[in-house]
Amino acid sequence: MKDFTPVNDVPDLTTSSPSVVTDRRRTSERAGVRCESATWQGRPVFLKTLVFDEPDTRARFEHEGRVACSVQHALIVSPLGRLDQTLVFPFVPGVTLRERLEAGPLAPDEATRVAGGLAAAVAALHACGVTHHDLKPENVILEGSRAEFDAVRVIDFGMSHATRLPLDIHSGARMGTPHFMAPEQFLGVRGDPRSDVYSVGAVLFDCLAGEPPFQDALGWLSGLNDRQVPLPGPRALHGVLARCLSRDRAQRPPSAAALYTELSAARRALGLTPLPDLSDWRGQCR
Image (tube, rainbow, N blue to C red):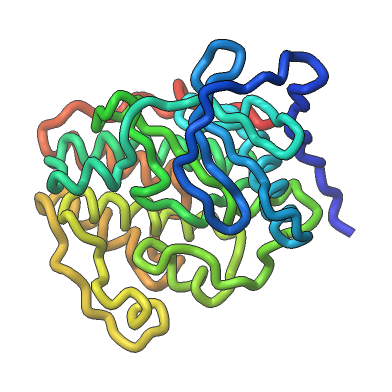
């Protein structure tokens, strides 16, 4: 039997801090979880509350909390803790990358800075045995609405896979967002970091083109067609885009760190400043 190192439980804030939450404002509710902005201990927070206490819903909710809490990194939004049935996250002022792209595509400089920040966050996840499995513009917040490397914040670990958890509650499931999920993920493959590499490439493509790479995403994922939107942006980025979006996992950059190196090299080829040293952006596994 494999020896799993247990992921720490989410800290219980009710035992150490006043649990009074004020200024609650609902933002959405789906799949049995209500999302709200609020104030806790005088600071703005974002809440996820379990409102439909059914076994599968509770399992997904607790899974997200434990995985999100297992990695500490400047570009990843991890929970501060929990209050009974509520996960408490720091509030990140800004917009999602999707909201930013609604105003139009990003210039190559901005797009590669954002993709570099996303790759750095993903490299930290992978170093802790976590595959996100739902990287997309909706799950990237740009702090302060800035399209910059250090403004990237990765959220939403509901579909993630963690090697340090003894059970994958999504095992074999075709979970993800079709426009940004890798073909093998569509077939139920879980826990391969190269699936996240594919998704980072798809996000970079969307940043540059203003649309995802495959209009018929389900047709592409099922192997019925290979029709792709023409590669966007300058030619110096076409190689990394094509490799990330390869149907064959073996043809993609082997890791998020390798992708990060390729992005930095492409920036230099474009006459742009290289990305920050990745060793300065390591995370901590809990």
